[in-house]
Image 1 (cartoon, rainbow, N blue to C red):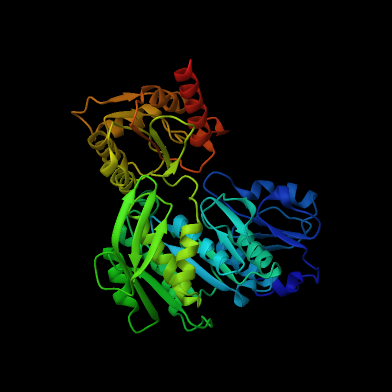
Image 2: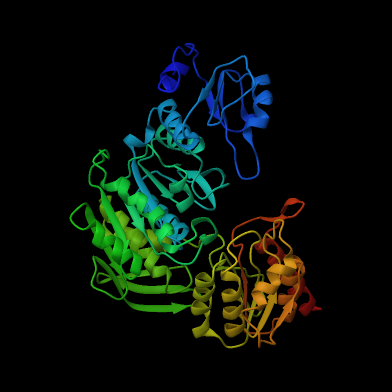
Length: 490
């Protein structure tokens, strides 16, 4: 497409240059690409305009008034997020229009639902693309790790285009509240939208639960919009969650509504739930099912995935086979086993509610002690810190408090906030170095103990004041366990 075809609505008499690419990263720019100068929280893209021009950018798109004069068209737009989304849709030919677009939103469960849904789709011999917190995949092949739960629009539309070219039928997306606020999914008409739950998270960004819910609601406003031309549009809602119940009431008679629940009459319900440290078995609408995921809360995720499959015409027996085929989700109560005589799990529990779910998953099977390693992120929601401290102290025999992406905040301030929630506890140690904390947890563990390393899950980095370093809880746990097993054999 030409520059004028993509941006003519913003600026007249643009040259008829054939645009070869779009990017907001000056390092990616090539000849005849368009550079979007985005002013972020920490990086101002306007500083990189000269670099983008040297690499051959044919135009610059900005939301700001620029005093400098550049040798290429400068296209001023009222909203840079909307402009990027619209440009990407146009450049890639609106690829989402010919695919089943499945959006999953809510505080917890999005990643597990996306993995379970993908496994069902593979079982049904379909070709899915998946975008979420861990990585972005097209027909099982990883395109890239995930810098964001929901990709920025330029990358998002590129991946959807790749999915279309690979003859995928379905795109399963985790849709974060940030993505909805920043217009990342603008221009995408969804066939199916899933709501999991609303829990305390991201209040540093949204300020209130009402604002947080309003952001999540935008996915369903897309679904019921008269501009959404997709067929068989469906909203899949967890009605055990109070906000889900509220959302379901709002959507009644406006779209095909499918509900799931463990406690109330719904379209998909589960009974006979039995949990172990190996997984969960249950019955869904009378059919027996098995999950290799830990914790009864994953039954909610399974019901959501089955509901999605039903709207895609997949038989429930095929869906159940797909559930059982998934061996696990990276960083979601992921067991790490090097032959030790106790259990160790790595989990992405970085909120109080998620930490409590981890304890609920293992508590019925406790024969020894529970040892928890956790911290709280710097420059993020501070209100959850004392809550997580209280939960860890109450549910653990030993708590090792450590760093978890402190960023540029003083770790001692974070530790103090955590300790405010456990003023009378005496079952904790503060070990700032996360690697050391993990090794100390393993060394302290005895036969039949359960060690939970919480907070980072699948992440393979630490964000420190000096920058980002490679760090994986799973890798460090494996090293510590191998040392433990070797020492015991001597």
